[in-house]
Length: 252
Image 1 (cartoon, rainbow, N blue to C red):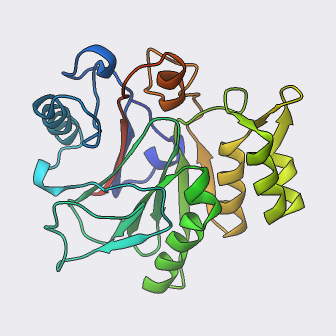
Image 2 (image 1 turned 180 degrees about the vertical axis):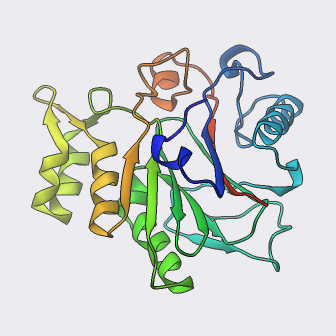
Image 3 (image 1 turned 90 degrees about the vertical axis):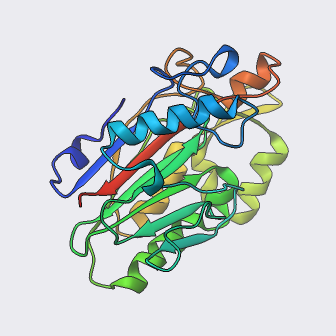
């Protein structure tokens, strides 16, 4: 379990970036796999989700998760839709107390947000695709829609590190076509490969939107005993991969 030093100081919220440890899943999903979209035993996934709900001191029914598709879609959770089984989005925000917002990741960036002026919380699933198509900007826009006078803090959780994220030249060119300034997020690995700094790419987008940012800086790819990693699973030719969960809630 990992925490933001900044968010720990806020009395009105609870949060946690959970590791892969301390759960019920077996094999490649060992042990706190919270990915409903994985091929893991559903009973074990539900037991894991029940466990993280208890740690957050909220009812499992009040744990709001997303069906994440690397989109730029944001949903506001309110009294009308709070009982939905699943939110088809890559970011969710709410003003409701006692509801925990969750994001599951395995290399992508989990971001939790808190507007201390208006008591709004949110979480974002930011892979390169969502980040480059506006998931971060769209989420902050929704915060602003609820109240334009805000003070938003974000914590960027464990994700793939800049020395682990190998990409090909086509990937690099896509980013450079969008903006030459994007070259700042890449370094050279060899003639055919670049290294992409996803954490910094996401960080800079938040800062540009006047969001105060802190980091829980761990590399999911390198820290095998602590985190699940999609890329590591692919390298090991495993059939699937687990997902870690990150949560935030407003105290009831």
